[in-house]
Image 1 (cartoon, one colour):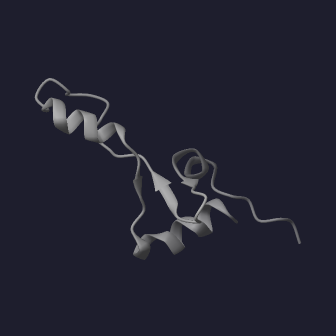
Image 2 (tube, helix red, strand yellow):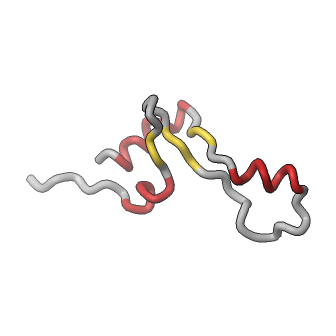
Length: 64
């Protein structure tokens, strides 16, 4: 039986942290930036962690 392939688009979007959590990048930071406040745009640059309820599903995609 052949090896399982990991989802390449998920591999590009998510990374695993040193502690084993999954890091993601925030949406809405690429266009229509004139109406967003400086503070909001600054916070969109920072990565966030995937919610624990979604972790199992994403881990399956990237570690298949």
